[in-house]
Length: 164
Image (tube, rainbow, N blue to C red; front, side, top):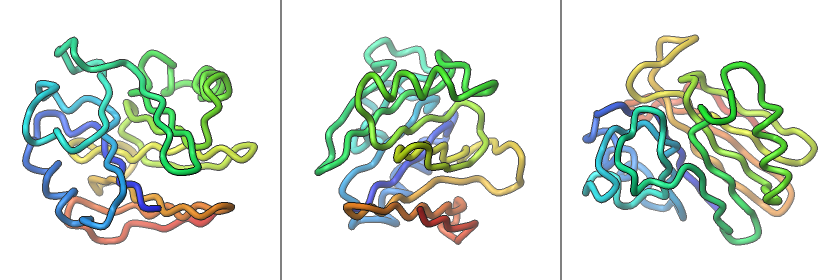
């Protein structure tokens, strides 16, 4: 299964359908918040989406738990879980909801790690990256017992790939 994850696009509406068009074979598209678009905006309608600290449309949920095939995905923006400081509150919530995959943004720093069988992923930012110059998003490819995470830039070029 292929999942595309983006976050922190901060008003750049055009980049969202551009990323989707680059991956027409993906089963799901997730936006981890701070799009700064209305919930019903046409540019983000194909994404599962949550509210970030810069999203003011109250129609966005603050978190989502979504079953995708044989995985449970927990998505939140991250600001309500202090992800810039620690992943512990996020990990505790992921355990509460039985998540296999945890998606979040907020810090604008890309990263992925596998902790006790749960994949934690921050796709970085497609508007204002931190910690590196490349704007970024992520593609997750799953099998029954493994994850492959590819980070791509805004031109869909490889930044790095991690296999778990």
